[in-house]
Image 1 (tube, rainbow, N blue to C red):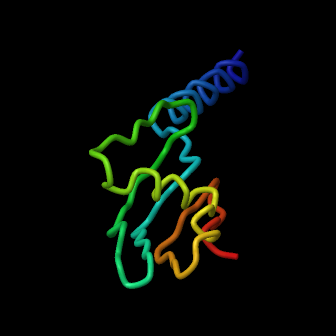
Image 2: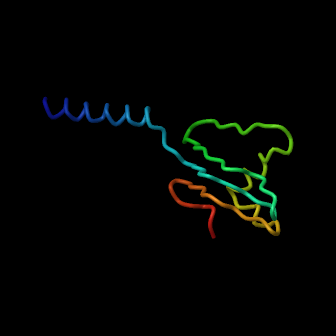
Length: 97
């Protein structure tokens, strides 16, 4: 009886931890992006959590598409660009070659 109660208590603690600490699947830290000498993105840091909806909104030309292209490294297809900072997907840096 005591063992089963202990197991149930441990399961409840684990469930509470999952609810209170959502899993980060994408983390951006101090991201700067440059087209030549022009800094298009400045010091962006954010987390995106599993099973959540994240919206990136802003006026035309503010860098939304540039930011999203950093996630799949499509900006590398454009000449004279560079990325500073890091982008972690499930704790693995995807912003480097």
